[in-house]
Image (cartoon, rainbow, N blue to C red):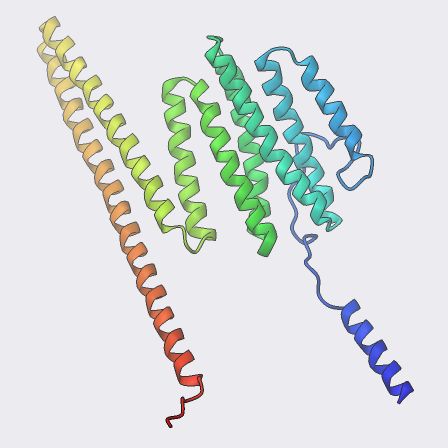
Length: 301
């Protein structure tokens, strides 16, 4: 009996030892432009790296310099993430992902502070915006390889980064800012559709924001063409008037098609949402019926 008990115990130990564990080592990101900090998050001395960063921020006296420093630190965290993934270190991965998100948020806020002070931040906004886009590309690569907890974490960080980027692009020239905002909304919709199962409400909200932006841009484009026609009329140049009127009509037709395409996208998203709701309702009904059919029958007295 004792030998049998020992054998069962050893078998149990071996079974627990070889149970599959969460692995992040298979998910990787490409090499980054920035290098990692001197001390990695899995080191007991990692607090020294944080102290070094606090000193760097203390010496960055202006909001612009703070924005640059925060962006650089975010780059270090991204570089460190490659090592933490390779080492399958969950705590280190969480630390680096949070570091990327928090530091980009702080960079955006510092940039906003500089704007409020009336400083020209167009060049710095463009540089930080480009840095953010490179980091987003790395995280997109990681997301495409991720499952389970890691996928959830990366999706959360991406959402936070888009919020930070939305602040950064306000420092760009108007036309460029609108373009970046539009592209970011489209990318978020694509990500939601690809990786989320219950994102229909959020997708509809983003499509609505795109429609609103498209409508405003359409009005601006048409007004610009109308002003060109008026200028030609003032010059009393019949050939120029004819040319500008033709361009105005082309612009109107183009904008009608753009707005119609957005409307189709919105209607398709609504139908998808309704289909999802119908599927969930049918699934719930089937589940209830199956539960009823497997429950013991109640006896009557």
